[in-house]
Image 1 (tube, rainbow, N blue to C red):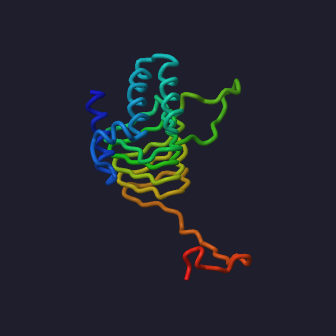
Image 2: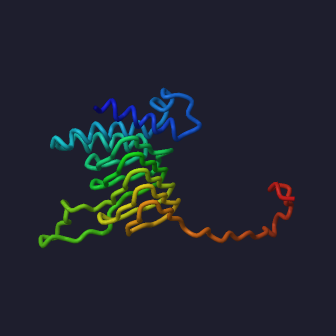
Image 3: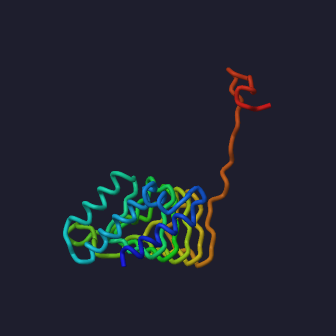
Length: 195
């Protein structure tokens, strides 16, 4: 079963990246496949209640790839992380099938309430749910256990979300205004390729 689902993850990478020339290139050259493979093995151990080892596996993959996937997260089939550095997927995240995310994406928690003893509430759902066929672009931050990103949605780069998005939506920030100023010291525009 693990081999089958990992083969789908590799296929997701190949189908989604026109720079990839073969499945072998995806398997041996893409850090996200190392992170996802390690996650899938660690997740099975986590489900079986194996202490410590799943987290050690996840942190090892994190240290090599820059991709931090908690073994408690639930991730569906045909999953791919493009580029990958800086991705964080929290423990209670739920990710559906055919989801693609890009570098710098965080599926995180909002600040947590405390129990009477002062400990954080650890057993509650703290991280978002991402439904099927969602694409999340670079730098997006999605927070909170009640936040659901509906099926077929696209989340644009650098978006900050703490509330749910209905299915089929595209969410993006307004384009920023760019300011250009001429450097008084060097007015030779040709050195910048400007004519």
